[in-house]
Amino acid sequence: MANILLLTSSPRNDQSLSTKVAKSIVHAIEAAEPGTTTVVRDLGANPPPHIGADYVEGRMLAATERTPGQQQVVGLAEDLIAELMACDTLVIASAMVNFGIPSGLKSWLDHVLMAGKTFAYVDGAPKGLVTGRVAYVVQARGGVYTEGPMKALDFQEPYLRATLGFMGITDVRIVNVEGIAFGPEATEKAVAAAVDRIPGLLKAA
Image 1 (tube, rainbow, N blue to C red):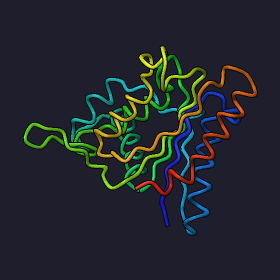
Image 2 (cartoon, rainbow, N blue to C red; image 1 turned 30 degrees about the horizontal axis):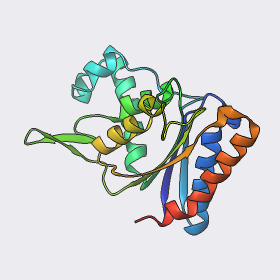
Image 3 (cartoon, rainbow, N blue to C red; image 1 turned 90 degrees about the horizontal axis):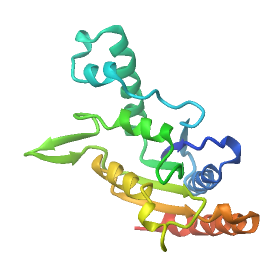
Image 4 (cartoon, rainbow, N blue to C red; image 1 turned 90 degrees about the vertical axis):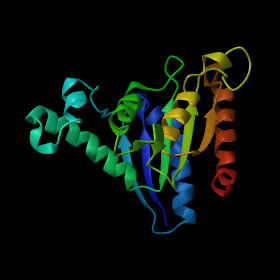
C-alpha cells in the first residue's frame, strides 16, 4: 500500500501530456498496491503564491511571534510540507517552460524547502530530512533535451534532481515526453514510449 502525492503543474490543464503520463504512473501503482491513497495537488490551476517578506521573515519566528499575515503564509508552507511528509511516493508532472519548470511548481518548492522541516545543517553540511521516498518525475518537452545541441539548455531535470536531493529524495525516476512540438505523430510516439517505460520504473531498485 502506497501513499502518493501527485503534483501537476502544467498550464494546459486536461490537455497536459505530463499530467497524462503522471496519472498513468499513479494508476499503475494503485493497481499493483490495493489500498493506495492518492492526494492530488494541481499547481497549475491553484499555485501557491510567490514567497514574499511575510514568508521569509515569518518562518524564522516562533508561531506566537508571527503577525497574522506571517501566520497565513507560513501556515500554508507547513500544510504543504505535512502533505509531502505524509507520502511515501511523490509523482511530479512537469512541463518544460522556457527551459525550466513551471512557476507553480517552483513556488511549491520554495514553500517546502524549509530549514528544520525538510532539511537541516549538520556540522556545516546540509542533510535532507525527507528520506525513504521515491519520486517519479514526468517531464514534457517540446524539443529534445536529453541529447544533442539543446541538452545544455535543460534546466528542468538538473534543478528538480538538485532540489529533491537536497531534501533527501535521491531515488528520482525520470520519464521524458520529448519532441512533442514536432507534430501529432511525434507526440503520439513520445507518449506511448513514456507509458511503456512505467512497468520498468516501478520495478527499479
